[in-house]
Length: 253
Image 1 (cartoon, rainbow, N blue to C red):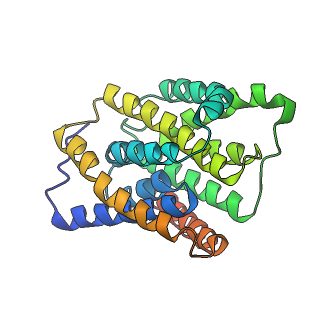
Image 2: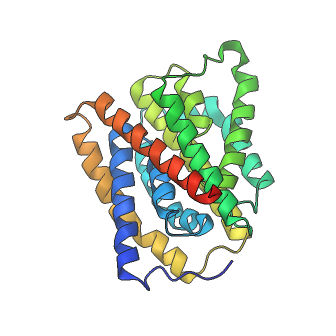
């Protein structure tokens, strides 16, 4: 990978900071969205692999916050470990996809993943509860999530629809999402490090991006109980769908 100096262009620095504030705000309100929003916006200006590298530290820190605030960490780990382990396997199998020479293909894949997730959510299409098949479904979902993460840097498909199908209450679901995103973030970080994506500037930029991400998340968390969540979620999904469609079209045409 070629080196990228994130501090060379003040306008770009400001744009990246704004992307992390918005992504953190969305995560604070609905419990997810930081990787999707940040990757989508940053990929408008950066190679997807560089965008993913900048995402790693803010994603880790905000997910630790989300995990710490949840009610049943140990119980969720016992239930979800087959899916989480399979995420690592999927990212390992797809290692090199995001950091390869096909940056345009990675951008198209990212756009399609964002549009697909938003479209399914807007249409209120939900996976059926796995029931007695959960032991089989969990590693399949984890493997697929790992492959999508390796190709796009986004952790939502199919992990988020699957976790939503488990019938968890609100706080358990938010903590389960944080646990899933944490596993995907660590697996992606190891993959990017193995592909020599990181340099000093990208690592420093990722560390500094924690500040706007946490600021946005704090604001979103504060406003979570003061705004109509359903309305916010609908407009968030519409915007995510439009962003994904634009990225895919840009990569194709």
